[in-house]
Image (tube, rainbow, N blue to C red):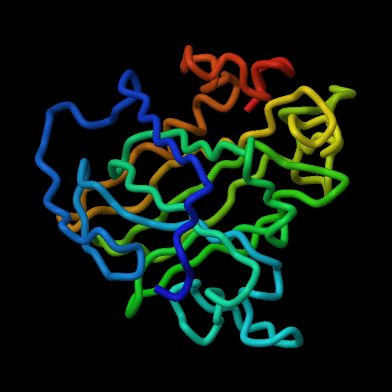
Length: 246
């Protein structure tokens, strides 16, 4: 691994059992636990991936380069940079909600950007996504993991063009794609709002048996609803406080 695991982050993985797309219980056939190792999966397997927090230019070979490397690539030297790492292992093709408690972790203190990644020989990584700076904080994201024959090929952030917060004065639309709250409204930053990060996770493509993943299709059909509202223990989240949009 090129970057260290943080001890300060509190990580949670909540799987929405009511929307589970697997009709029967299957054993986890994927024994690869490191996000920096290659895996080939089937539906209902566990799948390990990471999210690295660091300054945007830390994910590129150098500050003037357009070549982005995976956080698993030691050429980035993220272990010596201002970075933090969150690890997750969701079930493949189940709609999941990943949350990162920001009561003691401030993304803007670690560069304010995040990249999702997995794999080594078949390294895949998302584009850097803005999370926070001293002025604005984005708390809700949708991440799609795209597979081909069970091998992860791509991770990408799906935006809704601020449709979820349109007309809501509590939010600011950044770059016509992200709904953000002012950072000074967040708990431990001078305000009272829980600004913990919520990442809705879905899958697309096919597994190693060429079975088609359906969770992204299901999420597209559910965009008009609040998935947060289905988690009773997250009712005090930012989204619940501000009209339960996702």
